[in-house]
Amino acid sequence: MAAAAESPQTRRTVVLPAMPATGALYRRALTGLLPGVGSRRADTPPDVELTVRGATVDRSHLAEYDRVCGFRLTETLPATYPHIMGFPLALRLMTASDFPFPLIGLVHVGNRITVHRPIGADETLDFAVHATDLRPHDRGRQLDVILTGSVDGTVVWHGVSTYLSRERGATVGARRDPGDRPAPPAPTARWRVEPRVGTDYARVSGDHNPIHTSRAGARLLGFPRPIAHGMWSKARCLAALAPRLPDAYTVDVSFKLPVPLPATVAFSAGTTGTGWEFALHDARSGKPHLTGTLM
Image (tube, rainbow, N blue to C red; front, side, top):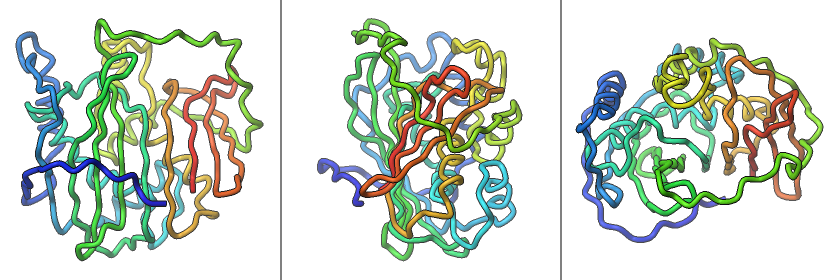
């Protein structure tokens, strides 16, 4: 399934010599929370595309990522792994002064990945990232961060991450009564998500947002305890489907309620006429954590 076409836009291209170090970028993001620092933000996505060429796979890192997310180690990259490889580039874009939102506090509400063909662990990829489609949301504003991976000039992987900035004064839609929530489908598996998932995934992904790794950081942003990364949840679901995945596909998920750490979650999956539908719910209450399609 091809990714949706974007509106034409002129962007300047900045080629970086290597993937940025995420530690310095997170320090920049935390500094931006200080009063008077980073308070003025752009009203449009930055007109820049950041690029890093010649990225290779660290086999030991890939093995650790597979272990944390539940994938079997093979010679082909999991669909979510290029997202990890290119994440420092996206982080550089999202911590720049001309990015419309501060990084800390952004909510990852959706992610769509298109795998155009299997990507071998021995291949070298060029990554490019830009932001687009800043638009209103009933709880603030949201935009898409587009990351692509190419081999020899051909795009083989395409990812769209949608982020929401919750803002004061936004018109919030009517909240759904819990009684209106449809009953979750029968689970095909139950997983215990231990507290270490937050720190383990932070280590292999480079995403050290304190909301996932620190009780104090989680409380600062309104959660009583750390929550699992949304991309860990997506990867864990794909790992469960991995033996039945085609060579090329698009997997699209919406992140619903966060998974608190620890938790027990129920995974469900079923075939449709064109692919799969899957979901992750709280095993006891049935509250939704993630819904997805694969075609």
